[in-house]
Length: 66
Image (cartoon, rainbow, N blue to C red):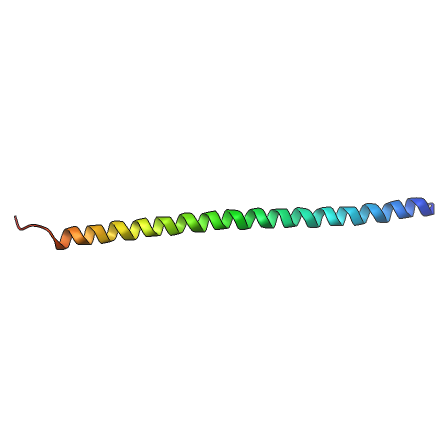
């Protein structure tokens, strides 16, 4: 191999490694965003469940005698 080919090989390997690193950063950001949305949806669902349970308890406590 000529020195020029060896240099091109090293540059290609370096660019490939940098590209994979950037791709991993992109995937981590995407996963973090997805996890944050899931956590927010779970919190909303838990708040809704808590509200419905408290409403059910209120109705049971304030039931009119039949």
